[in-house]
Amino acid sequence: MKKQLTDILNIEFPIIMAPMFLVSNTDMIIAALKSGITAAVPALNYRTDIMFRTAIDNVRKETKKPFGVNLIVNKSNIKLDAQLKTCIDKKVDFIITSLGSPKDVIAKCKHIGIKVFCDVTDVKYAKKVEELGADAIIAVNKEAGGHSGNISYKKLIPLLNKECNIPVISAGGVGSKQQIDDVLKLGAAGVSVGSVFIASYESGVSDDYKNAIVKYGANDIVLTSKISGTPITVINTDYVQKIGTETSWFQNMLLKNKWLKKYAKILIALNGMNDIKKSAFKATYKTIWVAGISIENVKKIKSVKEIVESLTS
Image 1 (cartoon, rainbow, N blue to C red):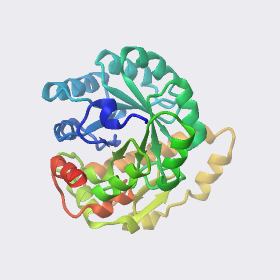
Image 2: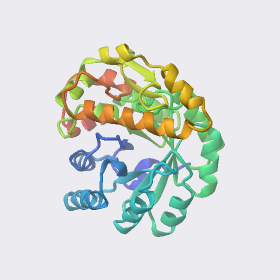
Image 3: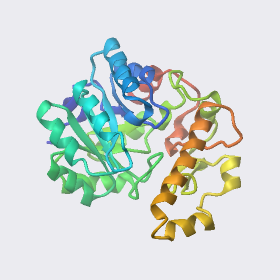
Image 4: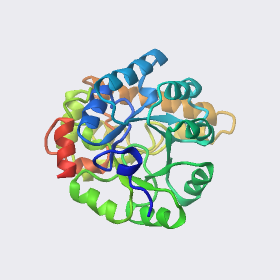
């Protein structure tokens, strides 16, 4: 029998409040931990290392329960070395790696007791991270919000369980107790839940964003490559419909040029992330709100504690 997330982290419920770019904050983390689940925050949500360290300290002051940090581990993250050092210095309980090889993170964390969970979307990469010594797999499925995978959780979880010997944590598409129970029955050791927590009192995003999570549903989620150059799920607002979901002919031209491709990707991503940030925190007609299909389950804004209760009872 593979270990369950509750046993790996000694938590009450097998749920991670997913690390959400721009959205996750210390108030949400603290509330989640006090409600019996765990949570992770993207290191990139903090502009400076001092702010990052302070955030970890603030969580520790409120609760000693386990929580983690999400690290982008490819070359695009120029802050990776400093972020990893902070995670080690502060002895966070686990790290979730995304978008690159977790080799160095695993090598530096395993021997000091920091668990390493790795985002994967297929068997090939899952087996690679298992060989490197990952403690668990975060199976990012087709139903996930933000940067999703290509395989439905119904196929991905059994497939990864068959091919790998480490626990599989399902990420994407769940926003109710019944959905979580269904995923666990497929063999998942736990679940990573994100979008339903955006509409929480503790979330620092704008009221417009929170109300959109309540107003829209699963059928309103679309996949767009226009925002960041890579496919990302967003709410199909009037503005998204206006600008379209496909990269423009000019963007395509730049992306196909072998000399300009690298810089075009960076430029498109920076512009897109800037628009997403503006939409998240203040009123704007450029309403680009990142979310997944699990918002179908959100009927009103609640506290993190109330959301956890709805997922567990």
